[in-house]
Length: 491
Image (cartoon, rainbow, N blue to C red; front, side, top):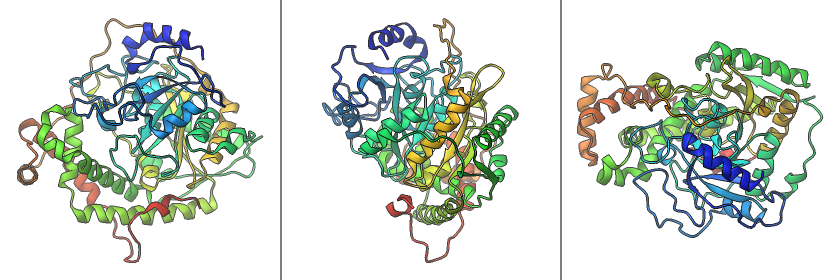
């Protein structure tokens, strides 16, 4: 991509699209290497020399990793990539939009009245906007794959542990990883090869087809996700394309799905509270509302909840490894619907746990364009593979993309003078249980977290859903250990 042309485009359109928190001037020298001249946007939880890491939050340490690149960024630069800037995100890489958060509002280049998905917002929307070739994001519960899906690009969550975590602000350490976003699966694979220091993968030849590739479709899980009719039709068309390319596509059970969703949520919230709990006590109102409402729940979860969730993750990983002994890939929609409008509070609050399963077990998963709704908004396919099969996964996705061309569509964003306002994050509270509200008030008091008033009402509503998920955590056999690094290692 021409760096000056990209900068001029960002000058014109970034005020409307809210991609960048910090831009570097064009003209930086690019090193020699396989990515020479590749422009990248880096999510602002990842350290980049020359700019602070703010997590788009008032609560951050401006001196953290100052003057240094995170290893994943350093490897990209050494391969010739050029950092265009640091990109917008949901606060500290969690939760939905909040109109009171300082900084640009990331908007969807296919329709600036709509959300990008999160949390790697700017790392996704800057690619179809033409601001850079590729984005680097982080993913702890779909935060690469969801914005890739809603913005019509390709996003890859790698196998847990494949990439170094140093220089990346943590949210939930055991489930998060950095990863690439780009227009194509092949570009994602090249970026990942550099970030993971796997140079042999840079020259992997493309597959001619998918003959012999076995793809499982967990129909019950897709039905539970309440996929809308347009997305469902696009998903069936994508499966037919995979069959045409030579794949054997068959329905499979996925009994581990919902328990892993519950285990993922418990893990993420508990670990996020461990990271942010002390600052929540001291700086409650400096955090945005959706972030503090969600993370505070991690302090309410018990040690028993967390430890059982880790055993469920281990049990679920073993079950999925068994599935991948019979199948090479598992396919679902990446997200159940197109991007919601910013002024649609119900749409912004909508949750899908389709991405959560692969975060819970640390297996690689990819979102890639599979169609468009009648308004031209992107729809996305998810493909997941066994741990360590990241490059095989990308090679199969590349076959699909060469056959379909959905990834080649380009939006035509223009500045807008009256963008849809971001809806307030508060939801209805009439479903809150008064006894649970009183119990939560006492619990937060014991924790020293200053929750009261409307904050407490909102948390009480969300807690009822979290409490339900904790109630469905199964009790694995006594010989199942807690989840550990070995559970996401290559088969």
